[in-house]
Length: 280
Length: 280
Image (cartoon, rainbow over all chains, first blue to last red; front, side, top):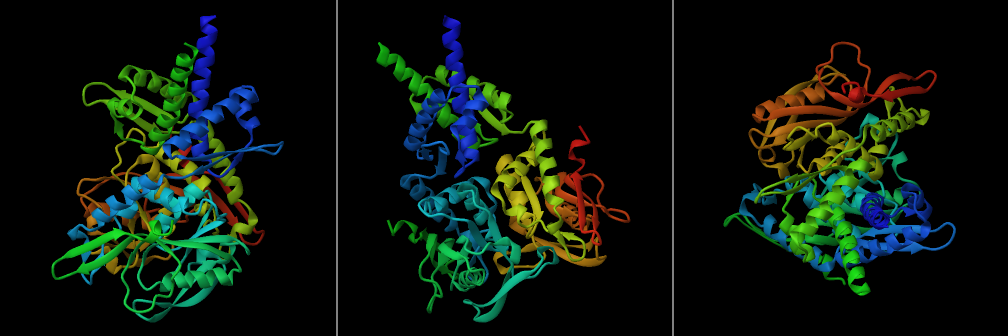
C-alpha cells in the first residue's frame, strides 16, 4: 500500500517536471491532452489535474498563461509572459548599465554589442517584448542585419514565430529578393534594403524589432518592405531609442530604453526606461 | 489533517514546476540551495528532495544533467543536453528537409535562410551543438555576420556563454576593432574581417560556429582572430558543410549536415548527416 502511494506521488512529480520543460520549449503550440497522456502512460483526468497545477504556478510566478482549449481538437497552449514588476525592474537595471561612461564611443555613439550577445539579457528582453504582443497574432518577426538579429531571435523564441532578416547588401544565397529604397534618417542619404522573396508570405502579420532607433529611417524602410510583400504591420519595438532633432519618420513604436542625453565633453550618458511602460 | 496533507502536496508540486522553469532559464549557473529555500520558504532538506526528483526526471528524459556541488559554497548546476537518439533523429529529418529541390539556387547554392529563422529548429540545433562541448569550458561563442548569428545565439543560450559577432564591414558603433585578412576559400580572394576589441577577453576559451562551410576560409579567419586576441580555440561546429575540391583550410571540425551533391541539371540536392556523430 505504501509503495503504491509513493509510486503515484513520484509519477506526478515527474510528469510536472517534464510537462513544464515541454511547455516552455513549445510556446504558443496547441498540445493535445492525449499527447501528454501517451507520453506518461496516464489517464487524461490525471493530466488535467497536472495542468491545473502548472497553470496556477505559472500564473503566480509570472511565467505565463496556460490556456485550456476544450473539445476534441482541444488541448493546452502556453503563452510566455512576464510580470510588470519584473519587466520594469529589469529595464531599470539595463538603463543603469547603459549609462556607464565607458560605453561612450567617438561621435557620441553608445556601445551596445556586448549586451546584445548576452544570453540572460536576450532571454529577458525577448520575454519583455513578446509580452507586449500577447493579444496579437504575430506570424513573423522582422529585423535588419546585423545588430537587430539577436533581438529578433530572442522575441521569436517566445512568440514561437520565425524571424526574417532584411539586408543592406544582396547575397547570392538569398535567392530572389524584393528591395526598397529608404532615407537614412541620420545622414539623409538614400539607401537600399532587401529581403529574400521566399522569406515572407503575403498577408503575414509582422512585428518589427531593432536594436537602436534614431530618426526611424531604417524602421520606415522595413515598413515599406512589409507593404511590398502585402503583409501587415503588427507593431514596432526597439531596444533603445535616442533623442532626435527634427521630425521622426515613425511615431507609433515601443522602446525599452531611451538614451536621453550623451555629453561627450563630460563623458556622460543618461539612459532611462523607454516609452514601453507609458502606454498601459 | 486532510487539508494539511493537501497543502504539503501542492507546495511540492509548485516548487517542482517553478524550479524546473528556473533551472532551464539559468543553465550552467551555480544556484545555492538557500536560494530555492528562500524562494519557496522551505527547509533545505525539502529542497534537496525536490532537486533529486528533478535530477532523475531530467536524466530520464534527456533534458540534461543536474549536478549537486556540496559544501558551503555549493548548490546545483544544470547542464542542458540531448540524447543521441533524439539528436540523430532530428538531424536526419533536417537532412531530408534540406534535400527539397526548391532549395536549389542559381550557381548550385542551397537556400537555408528560412530554416535559420525558425525558433524550434534553432532551439534543437543549439542543444545539439552545446551537447558536443559539455565537458569543455566555453567562455564565448564566435561567429561571423550575418547568417552565423542565429546559430551562435542558439548555442549561447544552452552554454550560457555570450556570443561575439565578427564582421566583414567596420561599423562606428563597434568602437576599436582588431582585424585580420583571410583567404576566402571559394573565390581565392583576400578579404578582411574584424572584431570589436572589447568583445573578447584575453585567454577566453572560444567555440566557433557558422552556418555553412565550403573551403573553410572564413572559419580559418576566425581562428586567426582568436590568436590575435590571445584567446583559445575550443572547437568548431558548422550547421552544414559541402563537398570541396582542393585542400580545406580546416580539418578539425564538426558538421551537423553534409551537402553531398548538388546537381543543377537534374535539380537534385543530396544532404546527409554530417560528421558530428562519427567521432563518438
